[in-house]
Length: 160
Length: 160
DNA sequence: AAGTAATAGAACCAAATCAGTCCTATTTAT
DNA sequence: ATAAATAGGACTGATTTGGTTCTATTACTT
Image 1 (cartoon, helix red, strand yellow):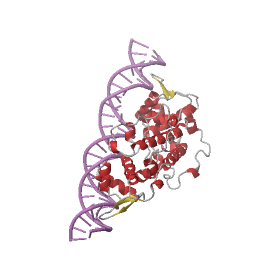
Image 2 (cartoon, chains in turn blue, brown, purple, cyan):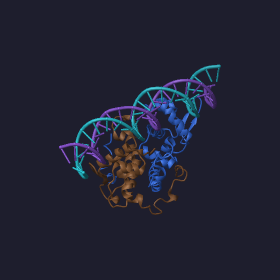
Image 3 (cartoon, protein in one colour):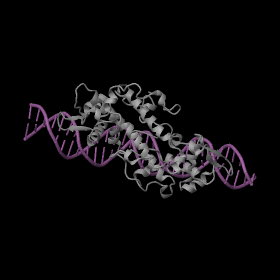
Image 4 (tube, rainbow over the protein chains, first blue to last red):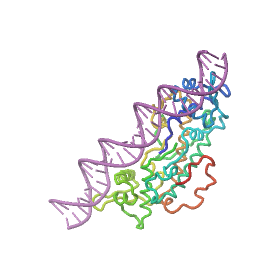
C-alpha cells in the first residue's frame, strides 16, 4: 500500500554521502557520487537536479562545479526529501484530482474518506519530518524503534 | 510517495455498503454491489474474493448466495482492509526482499533505513487500525481532523 | 434430478507508470 | 578556447496495475 520509488530511495542514499564526508560541507559532482554509490551516472544526475530544484542542494556549474547541501543536515528531513522527489502524498485519487473517481457523486464515503486521508497524510508527514539526515548517519539511539511497539502479526519480513 | 491502489479504494467503498444497509447484517451478491456502486462486476467480484480470503467477509455459494461481513463493523478497520487487498506495507525494496537493492552492501544507511521504515510502518499502521468501518459511515466527530494540524504548505490539493 | 444462480480461482490483456538513458544547451574555471 | 560540469527535456523498455474472461464448483428451487 505504501511505496517509495527507487528514485527517492537513491536520493536519500545520495544525501547521506554529503553528511558522512570528513569535510564539513563537501561538494560532490554527480560523477563522484555515482562512483561512491555505484549507481548509474544519469540516474544520479537526474536525482540531484531534482534536489536542487526543491532547495535541498545547491549546485555550482562549470568546471569544478558540483553539489552541496543547502542547509545543515540536522535541518533536512527525510520527509522533505521524499516530497522533493515524489511530489505530494496522497492515498486516493479523488483527493488530488476531482472527477477521476469513478464512483463520483454516489460514493457514500467520499467525505469521510477525505478526512481520513488527511489524517493519514498528516500522521505520516509528521513522522517523516521528525527524521533528519543526521539521524540517518549518526546511528539512531536505541529505543528509537522499540520492538514491542511493532505490530505483532503484521510486520513485514525480516531485514535483508 | 504513498498510494493506495484502486482495488483497495473500491474495497473500502464496498465494505461500507454492508454497514450502511438498513438490515443488520445484510448479504449482498457481487452483482448487487456492482449495481450499487456502479463499479464493473468482475472488478467487484475480484475484490470480494480477496476480502473473503482474508477473513473480512464470509461468503455463501449457490443460488441466493452472497457475501456478508465476517464481524461487526466496529471491529473491522481500514488498516486491515488495506492489508487484505494489498498485502504488506513497505517503503523500500530492500526491506522485503534481500538482495534486490542495487546499493547492497555498501549502502551506508541500510541499517538505519530499516529502522526508519519500521517506524513509519508502525506509525501508519497504528493510525489506520484506529479507524473502523463504523467510523467511516457514522460521520466522524468534528475535531477528528483538525485543520490546524495539517501541514501548512505541503498538503495536497483541495477536495474534489 | 435438472436447471439456475451464485462464488472460487486462475489466466489473460491493455494501459499506465516507473526506471533508466540519451541528447543538447548552458555555465564557468583554467 | 577548451574542458568539465550542471540544466532540462525527450525517449525507451520493463514492470505494475486495472480490468476482463473463462472454467469449475457449490447450493437452492422446482
